[in-house]
Length: 302
Image: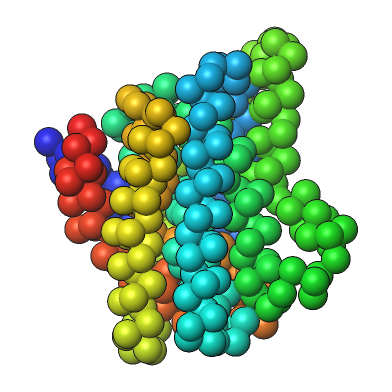
């Protein structure tokens, strides 16, 4: 049943890959589509989802805390492992991102299919807590040390993230009870509906199979940590925080999906090993076709 539910998601990724390989509709289309989704359509989905979210619900607050705890625990473990096996920031940055960052474009459709609008509302809460933390630890890892970038620089980088801005706006609407009046909710809902299929097509278009020939041991190790260890850690963390139902599902799904394609952009901007990062993105996305259903079944997610 789970496979029947989520196979269309991976079919869209495959379709995006095939279309991009054939340069259809054009080679310039895919970067432009990714930008409009990242800066416009996807933030609209977050605002519309968060504006309706029960932000005062204790279970929702525990979900946000569990999301942050899961990322920070993984970051600490990786940092300790780096002491045993030293590696430069250019290498450590992709490894850390490959373990702690998540493909939102893949997680949201899965949650929409498995838990409907409630799943999307809880997912917006998860993103509001996890996106800033994930961005900060990734930047620190790629720049080698916390002191190598000033707190103001880090804050500026995070504050310019459109996903974070959308989460702040959605939270403000929910906390004040203003909501989305005068048809703005329907407007943002329509934009948000376009973001999920377009995002999945863009994920497929960004795959680079030629990078899989680079450092197979590193790709396999990082992939195993992301696709198997992280969801197990999320299940344990969720249990310790008393999560159940949809909140537990959200925490596990976001921890079971592959790394975000935007990790490649950040790695390239901060002079990390971009080829290795592209290989991590591609290998995890391809493996997720098998690992996501398997992990959800093993963790008894229905």
